[in-house]
Amino acid sequence: MRDEVRIAAARFGLAVPRRALTGTHGERLGRGLGSSVEFEDHRDYQPGDDPRHVDWRAYARTDRLAVRLYREEVAPVVDLIVDRSASMAVRDAKARALRDLIDALGLCAGQGGGRVRFLEAGGGTFDPARETALDRPPTALLPRSPLFPRSLRVVVSDFLTPDDPAPALQRIAAGAAHLFVVQLLDGWELDPLATGPATLVDVESPQTADLVLDRATIAAYRQRLRRLQDDLADATRRIGGTFAVVRAAEPDAMLGGDLLRQEVLVPA
Image 1 (cartoon, rainbow, N blue to C red):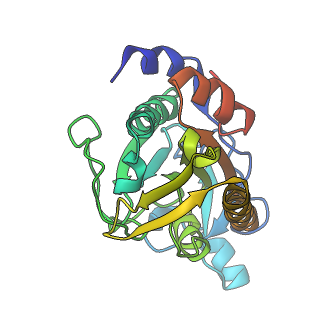
Image 2: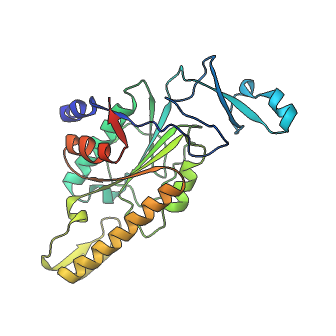
């Protein structure tokens, strides 16, 4: 982990929304939900919940299984889901920015003692300190490893695939306390230059495309990119999550600029 990442991340923590994504009336997060003796609220029972927290008196009255929620005495779990496909390393600056962002988000999530799990999109858990390769083939966003019930969840990807990400985001959001959707893009992906004739190579397939990078071509590309970002923002908004676009840059610019402004991070 680079020193620049540690210095930048020390200034911020992961934002914790006051309310969960889904559930019944009154479901609150506060600073997280744990197991103290101070009763907070109810929510519907979910598979995997501790049976000791079921409110059996409420069940007798309403015929609905519900669990008691308590103010946090234990740290929340943060599931950090990372796209490690080859497109995330299309340029060296983007690959470095992704590694910095993974490290920084892990530190920010742990500022208050949060427990962070690093999950590969379409795969299992991984250690970002040891597994740094960004060469996976395109895959689904949903990890194979089960997501922790009521965890805070963060998805980091460029979302530059032909597939509609909305169904996968809905599945990732199911049972979450909150979902942050972070789109990381290289400067060229955000603002391509008109350089004339070019051959574009798909880093994740053998496909190539010969075209002229002129004003009209770039205008059409930017329109498609805006449409993708609008669709991502709309899909995230429908599930009550937070969407942010991050330009690959130095840690301080990504954290103190993009992520702070878009309310993924808050001052520590």
